[in-house]
Length: 296
Image: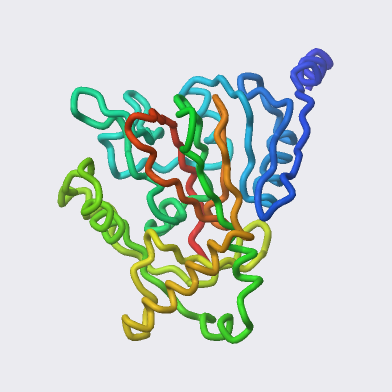
């Protein structure tokens, strides 16, 4: 590398700070502008904070969809959501999450966070993480809640850990979709092509985070239909117990959105929930999703 190139690289470097929130999850990245180049070692700092804290928040990021996608791709290949009607035009990597209705039709997925879930856990390779960028926010409500599924595993009673060892669970997009469709006038019936794109998958109930090495409770209220190999009533009762354990208040971080926030969360070690915001309180965000590994 020439001296001029080294000087340009030094000049382009950004000075930023990572400030943990001090709760079960979360850290804020202060002083970073995602419009500017980011060196590999700077990206490594962000990834380390992401793995350690589960949720990282970048404030006041006035980036274009192209910049949002480009930054997201630095963490891995992007996954395209099966609901193609809510892709941002010209940018299928971005899913529009919105309660806004125009000409009698929603412009985005209204109830994306209507129950606790980990994004795309119904895929053979679930999401590593998602990056959500606020576009339009209501003056009230609209928070997103995140739960720490690694801490949840650590705090399980020993006998429950033993019970869950080696168990597998079924994750199904159609299971969640049809449940939410009964509650929402905006979810159309899935086409057979869409159903065929997302067949149910099995994943271990307890997984190991591929970067931190921590044990994770990998079941959710949203996508986990049942635990394999036990009667359905026992499975339902056990899953209910696990969901309540994961989402107990001391295990949850509540993100109160600010204009132009970009929030990046680890779907391998967290779950999230966002109650549906009433339609008169307009809320629109853009989401990209980074592909992860096969859970083990």
